[in-house]
Image (cartoon, rainbow, N blue to C red; front, side, top):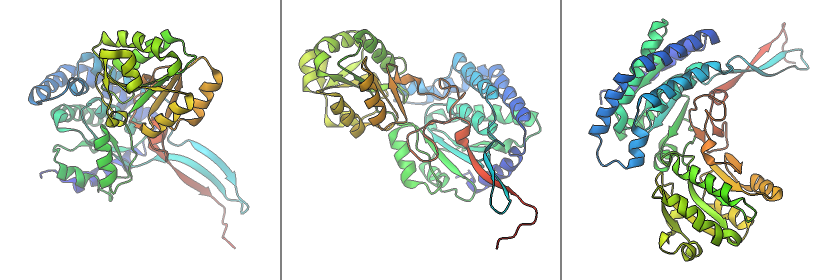
Length: 415
């Protein structure tokens, strides 16, 4: 291996000390330069990205989609950086303050985490999104992307580092591993001397591997076995529109719907209607016996594994249930705690679903595709946390901070 992770970690830690001292105006100026540089050098990025695509073999259509950058997507990344500029800077905010019995003035203040590691797969926009959020919160970042997008990610980091240099800042605030071996990845996960938190973004397999092998604290993100439940009182046209959007608008992402759960009383009317619309996009339907009995040749019998699978493709599994409680029980047994939705006109049923579903984001009468930092108003996101400690759901600026207690006295000693 030619990558010296200890050296990278030490440099990132040193850069993080400088970042922590920057004020909001300085950080926003750098983010603006980063956005402009991405736009101005978009043709360079596209050329390298096309080479990555040409060198990758055996990719699925959905994987290629996640890997591909065009001018529109590059400008969207730049827009994400500018959205981050417009967001309030949490660093230095005081969550609460009080005076204790000894007369000490105690304040709980927001500070950077320090050095954040990101391990991710095909989507090169993560390189920019994560860098923007980490920089705004005063964190240095170490990036380890997938082999299929390696040269694209290296080019993006080159451009982001050049923006730092233009502002006389340490470019080691943004670094990327230039090798993608599993051996190096395992070493990266154990960089406890320098890395404060590790965030995996990608498939369930990647996330599981990181959780099992990392010694650095991990925030789990990303895996999305998302369900839409169509209640017996649902507006069926609304349900059809939402289901089609959630499945086909961008099936390769983690907030796309993978499962459709339907109440038995409306299944015979609704399933042919939604299947007709999904057929326009060549969505493969897999269902339980009741769904297959209704849809006949349009549906194949689902296997037990289907209920736990995140397809990231034009595939949808369908289950017919007897009641709302059966739907909730099934979803909680098989979901990945990401995003779940109910389509209903019954307020009581909507409240039961909201209260009882265990997930980071729970919707009533809306597509799961809205689980996104940009859509939530956070600017770009660093990931969607599916765990419960520290952060949950789309992770924006505040989730990339920690707290420090600042205590001021005038000579107090403890008795």
